[in-house]
Length: 154
Image 1 (cartoon, helix red, strand yellow):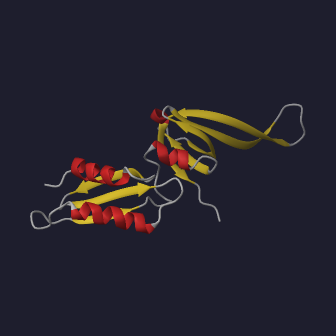
Image 2 (cartoon, rainbow, N blue to C red):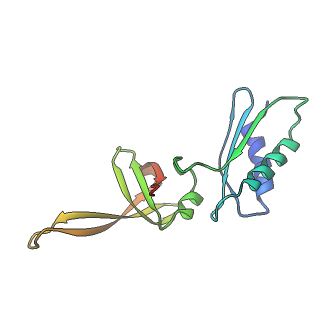
Image 3 (tube, rainbow, N blue to C red):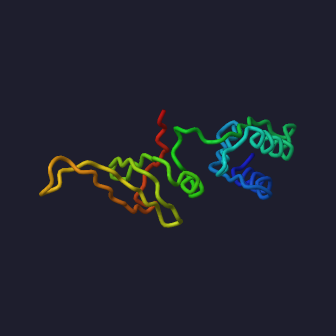
């Protein structure tokens, strides 16, 4: 049986020489292997091909058949690892907390403890005419987060 640990070891070995990183690895029934990799500067398809060929060359189809899929996470996929947060600092993100509260804002920073978001809103301020632009920075730990995605704007 092909295990997630075996695939992870192979991918880590291949990625050790560069700046690509693992986002997720899954081995599903029927030996369907899904590998998500990324890079802070963007991921060319040739890097996916290289990882795919490396993993395939280290598995024996004669012993066990498998299906292999190597790709980068799509824009609609939530972040799974800290490096994805770091890659997207300065971009607009949509965050859903574990309490199902939705927050949209600019990702200011991220570290192993959590993230900082800049949230802009227009509110009435006492003593001022009309609504005023209010900017708040909110710190959230990863334990508070359910999902974070990049906001795609055209």
